Image 1 (cartoon, one colour):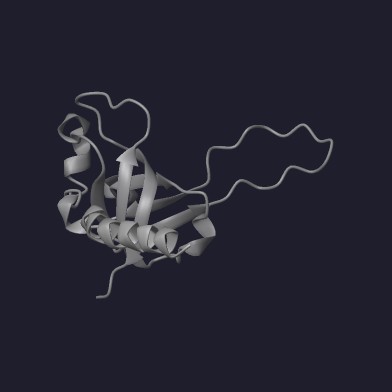
Image 2 (cartoon, helix red, strand yellow; image 1 turned 135 degrees about the horizontal axis):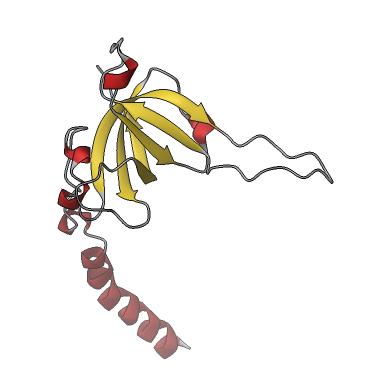
Length: 140
């Protein structure tokens, strides 16, 4: 019984340093921070990236009543921009970010988002839709 307890204790002591090394989070590089101008060249974006922007629209698919024939919805999302004060709507740069919980965001609030491209990106076409990985509010 004592021998079994000592064996378990020895194993735990030996594994502790290995566990502490495997939990080192500094080894993963932070995704690059890009601008809305960078989104115009989707071929220059590879892998996850970070972007800062203001939420200008929140979309959640409305519920479909029981036994009704409802048209399919686009995925729940938010739309963000880098310039919330732009008056000319044709000049507003937008990015649609798909998220399972769009209601957790506030309109006109600035956030830093970590996202990844959805589907295939087409060279020489702007990147307009991404999927959310993480986010945090930006203090101004």
